[in-house]
Image (cartoon, rainbow, N blue to C red; front, side):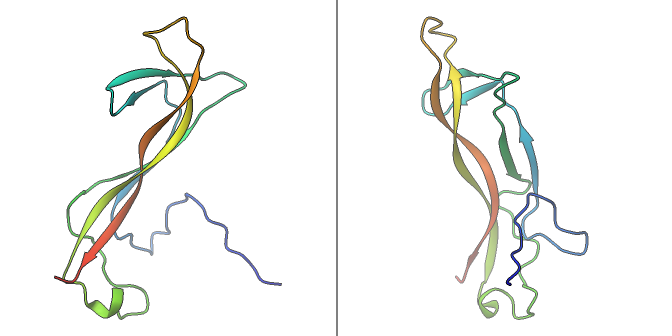
Length: 125
């Protein structure tokens, strides 16, 4: 029988080094800002419904990655990379929200963008 490794939000062990430092946390938002319109919405939270979002925010966006060698010793693509930089990635989450500017309307499911990963981009130029 093949054993499968379970993915986790747990931090790497102290003996491992991350390529781009980030801060991870789970939140239960009370309000969210819709980027295109600049409008704020109330996120519905209750005992029976708890809406959570996992965030992963880069500490050093645009800075060089801290570790560009992989465990095999050859590095990324045999060390052909000349430079690197940490980049914030985003994902979209669906949340049940209510519009305080239109209190007579029912709550709606809306989509919001959140920072969810910090990745290292390598360039060979």
